[in-house]
Length: 381
Ligand SMILES: C[S@@+](CC[C@H](N)C(=O)[O-])C[C@H]1O[C@@H](n2cnc3c(N)ncnc32)[C@H](O)[C@@H]1O
Image 1: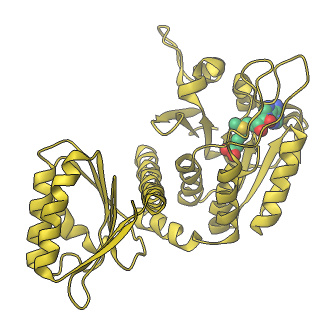
Image 2: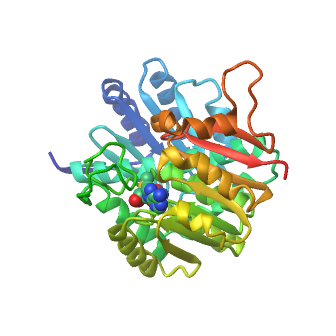
Image 3: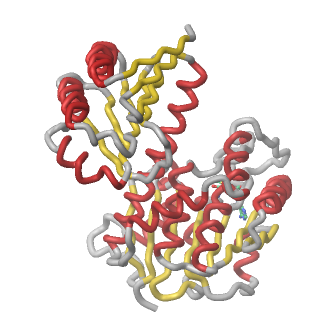
């Protein structure tokens, strides 16, 4: 059912929230973006606090994204509310936004409080993905910080947030968005008799298998936060993760070399790189192992391993001499394909056998993000 309603005035605002509470209790989630002036009225702040303390009595998925400006007030207001998950991010929305199962609310405070209530399935879907997109970005920022803390690297979280805003609507971001749209439909039937090109089993239809967006953002943030300049990626596919690595490298003055063996994918990636207008990507079409053995690559700051899992250990041996001290190897799919990369895991994490040790030149850390991202740092030459 489609409908649009408006409610104006302080009293209406508070009453509306009271009635919303009942519906939300029956729903399964409640997402909100706070807007700049939301807490300027003590009356409204009280109303919202009551609303949230009611929510906290029942388990609903209650999350809110607050602007940096509201950080102190929100932290104080919701400090006892354990059901509310709060993130801080400079989301540039002129009004507050609430998304529930059956409606989208736009809230504002000028010249007096008003609510526009919209019930429309497509709009709810749109805002829902908008919210989660911003939520996940925060997850990437948080996990980037976790890595930086773990390896004692100084970098300000707020600088990572700034990257997000600067990136909006640039051709590279739009191209990455485009890849997300073809992710499910693109496929290629490999006719050979053997398992190939990232297939897990013989005969499996080849898909793009791009990393999820939060992993891609983590890669971008790590490039920036570690000031990596020479990046190597093994496994390009359509170029989705490459674009994020390269967007990060535009901040560091760096460049990305990426290797892809499958021709149709290399062709697709080339098209995307052209569209992105980024000029810091070099695509090598060919087998990664053969390419690395040729020994033509220069020093590397950061490597992203995302190709044939069973060969990660061979790639490790070949890239270690090129990797600068302090440099990183990031390996994807530890959770879903850890069994295929056991020799690699034994090298960088050690085995469970008594006395077993990892390669003494590295320290590793598994991030619980998406398919499991294993971060390895070269600490000794
Ligand atoms: C998981 S996909 C890469 C996804 C990409 N990193 C992204 O997130 O957008 C793995 C890719 O590695 C490629 N690949 C597999 N084995 C390879 C090899 N030995 N050399 C180069 N590329 C390989 C596959 O063709 C496939 O496109």
